[in-house]
Amino acid sequence: MDRDWITTVTALTAACALAGAANPLHGQTDAWAKARSEMVRSQIASERGGRTPVTDPEVLRAMLAVPRHRFVPDNQGRRAYADSPLPIGYGQTISQPYIVALMTELLGVGKDDVVLEIGTGSGYQAAVLAEIVDSVYTIEIVPELATSARQRLAEIGYDAISVRAGDGYYGWPGHAAFDAIVVTAAASHIPPPLEEQLAPGGRMVIPVGPPLRVQSLMLVEKRSDGSITRRNLLPVRFVPLTRDD
Image 1 (spheres, one colour):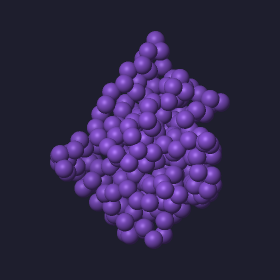
Image 2 (spheres, rainbow, N blue to C red):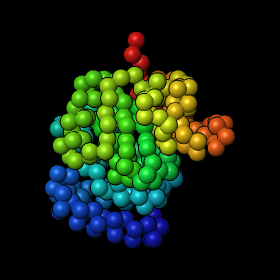
Image 3 (tube, helix red, strand yellow):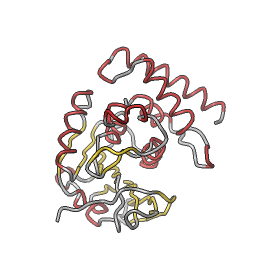
């Protein structure tokens, strides 16, 4: 990692530790804060394995602030900050920290943006986004996961996140247009309703490809005139985007 980014991560870690002392609901014990700091240093802001490091200070701060151990099952707690996805039940997973950070950085969001997430899971990606923006809407097709995520996010103190159980393919028209959309499961194609609900200048990050095989992480951008551009970024593996039959 570049020395400047070592300095940045160190400074952000100290700031998050102070914030945690003021807000114990975030689970900011010294041990967990140290685990998050190491996660950011060695996995997210590094070039390990030749991958592109995440360098956006706001994204790094969010990854340091969110208590990932609160979003994994109790029997996975020891692996909460490992560089791998983890099962959360119902055939779903929480994505590896690097991918969460990378997708967040690709969205390029700021404080005043409104973001839609498809695939709430345990609520971790939504929490990371809520550390950056003021308004997050998230849809989960598994009712049990939607309920538990809603309760978990409320307990931790993420009041700016709205959780709904439903089929995310159709988005959330009542709150469109969105400045950014992130899809945390692999679709066979880019859902047209999601492109329609992007605001001009908005971005969507979505894995596209067949289930249980290598997919492509894609960046979709809507220009000011409403035209759409789509780019393949890198190979990924996500659980499939399930639909409400």
